[in-house]
Image 1 (cartoon, helix red, strand yellow):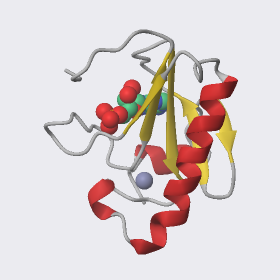
Image 2: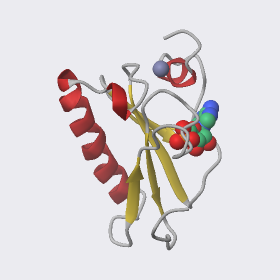
Image 3: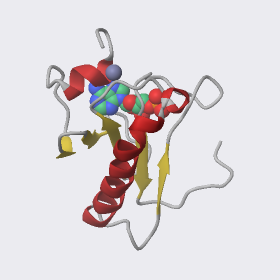
Image 4: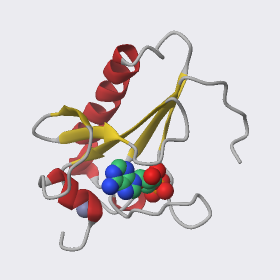
Length: 114
Ligand code: AMP
Ligand code: ZN
């Protein structure tokens, strides 16, 4: 989609620190990390948010969570613990309207989140 930052990243027009890619999914380091491990995992397909998922998107969401587990192991936070979070809408603080999951780990986290 034109003017979408994460579509630009998926198309290779905007350079990021890529840590994983396949036909459907891309993962890269967050530019403003909120934890020692902070990776964004996105579908290549433009989906604006959780609210815009449909039944054909099940496979890519499953793939995103498999990649999250693989990266958690690779980044050394599988045993210590980590979060996989999708912010949706204003109250949750979503700032980029291309679906993405934050993989966060490497420090103690609070619950409930702020
Ligand atoms: P959210 O606020 O949940 O929509 O998350 C958007 C995330 O994208 C934020 O954590 C930003 O730091 C991150 N971000 C924005 N631009 C870039 C970029 N060019 N490369 C990597 N991460 C980015
Ligand atoms: Zn997009």
